[in-house]
Image (cartoon, rainbow over all chains, first blue to last red; front, side, top):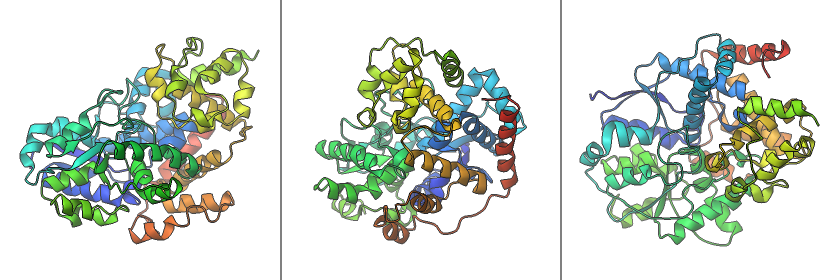
Length: 292
Length: 182
């Protein structure tokens, strides 16, 4: 096994609606010989609802998770953009603000652990493993597949916190998927919000924002969209049919998790990537491009 | 003018309301401004003028998506997304004088789920939301499809350390009762 080892924080969605993201992450890491151990008994990070109305609770939940992660060897590997953002925000705020840190330590009744590194899967593939090694593992290049890389909000914003890539003009997703042999398209809405936080309370908002994203990807000539967040995926994939109905249009854009597309390029089969869990069926596209 | 309220917002958000010079860049980039009666730059202006009751009475703060675009683009480093968090918290503590109830209900159920189960169980969250908001048929068409794809789970593994999550919630409540935290 390589030296790369991570403490895996899947987050709530990966245990339910984003099961294929969890499956493809585990299979991809196994294939690339990267160690991945799930943090035992992790809690929900609180996501947007917690910090929206109770920052102390949000920071405490994340600090507790960082404490649990500390017991597992390696940096923390996070799949969900929202969990990633919350864990990074917690580290940032508790480092900058001693008063908040003291309150959080009182709430979790333990010293906060801030030295562990929190990394999104993209970062692990692009930086820790490295694009050259990734490219060397590719045995089934995604030739001819035009991918619209969708970052959404929380992978790169705000400026000082996630530190994954430039907040206004990131390229990390494009670099990763180009290493897997795909083409990428330039498009206008890759950093726009899909309205994830309103998927339960105000689906009308989500439909409007997500339609603009799908429309932009289609106009740029993309065959499919790639995401690194289960909430973006939920809106783009699960609600796509409904959006097509509302706007009387047809997109038919399969929405892949980054681990599914990279997994495909290193030779993992459909059953190991959870392709059958996708709502917009990717099989015709992948067959047309001779990738299945 | 109630300066105390504005000071609380500044303390909670760790950012200065006074630094904003109304360039409007936040509202220009805000994906949700179109749904708000006070766009983001006006929310800050109302705070500067001490007219925070007008903010709390409206729906703007509940229609912020926390996408962080405003904070990223502000030329004066006003962390507006954090100001929105602070405003929502103060509104929440005052039992939400706002007209927007669905977003608040969703938040409340989300947090209750964490306290009870330690994690988010999406299907339960959606089902309880529909019942409590009286929209029994909302997203009904999605249900069977999601079930068939294994995206809705009836049962979940349970955390062994659930007692610890309850302790965090109750310690925070205690700290607030004693005035040790906002």
